[in-house]
View 1: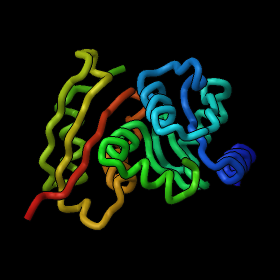
View 2 (view 1 turned 180 degrees about the horizontal axis):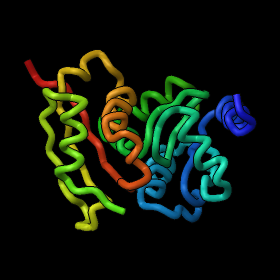
View 3 (view 1 turned 30 degrees about the vertical axis):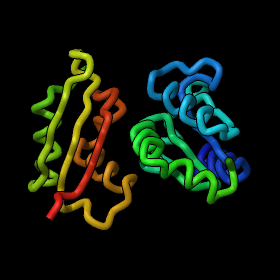
View 4 (view 1 turned 180 degrees about the vertical axis):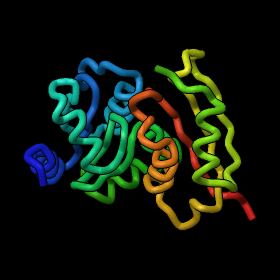
Length: 106
Length: 78
């Protein structure tokens, strides 16, 4: 595992809920990252936002880590949940709330 | 850098020949699309896996040449 993959692996395993995004929760820099942030805030789920724009290593590393080409990416208890589309679909169907409750993070 | 809706459809069809694809251009800039893809190949796959199949069909263009693809995948009702 490369250094960046190890660092990412550690971040997703030591934080309950992690959102790799463009910008920060207070200042998302992309519509999709903004939408993902709003969904988590709406559910009242505390999360760690990691700004992939802060380093190219992170920006590329996170795409390699899960073989997922875009950001944002949501991780709950170390598991990749999905990007903005899947988060929205799960949010609208109530699955995301159920997942958060089951994982004990909401 | 941009892609046309027909390009997107062609790539997906190459990988998922049975796919029924509906593409909407969200911004008219060739960079922001929404796509609804229905294919039997998604059966038994998680949403993440289904989307990864579509991204694989786009052969690395997703996130680069194609900035945004709001994706919805499903299996045919039968």
